[in-house]
Length: 431
Ligand code: SDX
Image (cartoon, rainbow, N blue to C red; front, side):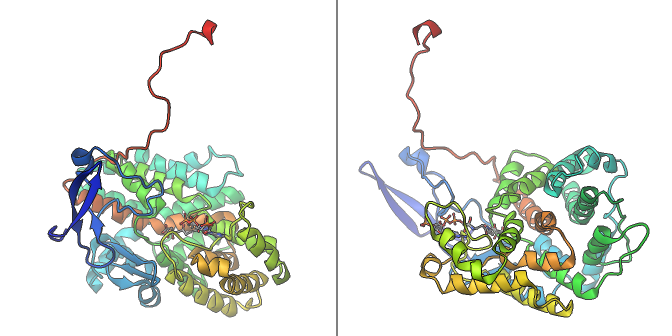
């Protein structure tokens, strides 16, 4: 934290209070209100956290106005173009790009943690066959605290590190097995001779009677999708992980809480909702009808994959995703994919409409990702599990960072109380 010479003055009930102003490396300054209640006897009010910094962090920086996303200072488009997911995992976890030797050691560690405890198979079998893969992921990841009890002591840095590696390594296996269980096919074990993205694709699409030859185009696109979803500052699911962790809960329980939060259609569930919306629109001639619905105050319908709490410009991830969608579909010979056509026409129509441009609503990371995932052969129900798999390293990195602050304490917001003041109980005979 930089020096706190600057202050802000807040006058409440005729009393002025000097509040320190904290200076960031880049981005908005922060008024430190930690002592406000003790000094002034008032709370601040910010239900959606639109103007609230919940922590300090060195991991990810977003400039919403400029459409900038940096991971440890490196722009997302450079990482997506030049790096790969496990190298980005190392960067997020440890703060610097690895040397070749460090990267080899890290990748070797992750590769050798991809198998699940054999008994976990039976845990999957407790779900109905038609269970949504996200329901399975929430349950199975939470259950990891029962199977990997030897890495749940959050006060032991070595156990924290082992839990981090186990989660990053095992999430593709858990997501793939959730998909296999959902389809009624046998589980496919990971293979140590495959890279992270290829292993995941093979575990999803191979069957015992016919192996799956990983197409390098698809594994590169899959790896890029993992990278584009890796971390994103203090979004809803990351804030959920931080809040759960602040009580001292074990890492598996905290990540399960993050998965549960990500599932919502306003957050990570938007990629599934967006593709279902594009399919429902079906053809470009129906776009005006849906644009009108999105603008109608009385209609709860919103354009899925559009808008963002922070980005008031293009989501830089959406730009890379759109380019990847064009490349992958062309290389697969399905460039005239009707869903992609509708997406492009819809984006064009929305960005020519003052309703969207005035409110600074642009395509976000979820607008094009589903088109690529569908082209790879995934059902829409697997879109959010893939987001959860990708975001695990971000959740874990933010979880780890929380422990680096010796002052960290349990998160416990207050409220604006609008209920009844104290009153006496009324016996039922008198009601
Ligand atoms: C993710 O936070 C993160 O970083 C998340 C994420 C990550 O990587 O972790 O980036 C991943 O969650 C991306 C967002 C995916 N969600 C969607 O695509 C769902 C559709 N988008 C909206 O639900 C909405 O835009 C949110 C939830 C993303 C953001 O909502 P905000 O910031 O609370 O904005 P808002 O709801 O206050 O909207 C501001 C105005 C409103 O109109 P007014 O009340 O001012 O008249 O814009 C309108 C909204 O009605 N609006 C939309 C819209 N999004 C906002 N209108 C139509 N379609 C939309 N998509």
